[in-house]
Image (cartoon, rainbow, N blue to C red):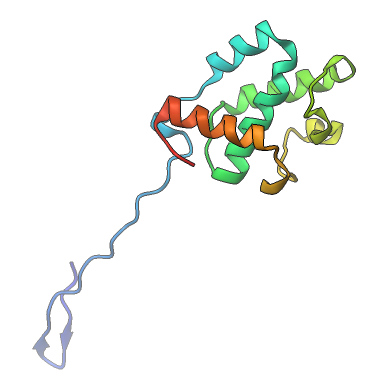
Amino acid sequence: MAIIIKKGALLTPEPAPIKKPEVEKQVHGRVLDGMCRVVMSSCPNGVIPWWLIASYLYYIHDMSILSDGLYDEMARDMLARWDKLNHMHKHLITKGDLETGSLYRLKAEQYPGMTKGAAAHLVRGEWGVSI
C-alpha cells in the first residue's frame, strides 16, 4: 500500500490494485487424453469429432481438454490416414489444417451443432463447467 504525501499533507493510502484471477486453460489441470485415446482405439474415425471438439473448446472457449502432444499426434495420424477416414464432418478439416496442426481458421459459427453440443456436454460432465 502506498502512502501519498502532497505538499506536506498526509492523504489517505492508495489502495492496492485488485488483480483479476486468470482463467485456467486446463480446468483443474486435468486433460482428457485417456478418454480420447479409448474412443479412438475403438473407433478410428472418432479422431475427427474429438479433434473438432478439442479445437472448438480451445480456439473458441480458451479451454484445453487435450494435451498439445496428443492434439498434434491426432493431426499427424489423420493426415497419414486421410483417404481411409470417414466421418460426416470430415469436410470441415483440410489437409492444410492437419499439416499446420491447427483448426484456428474455423469460426465459431462454422462448427456443427453436434460438435458444440458434445463439447458443452463433455466439459459440464467432466469439469462442471458450462459454456
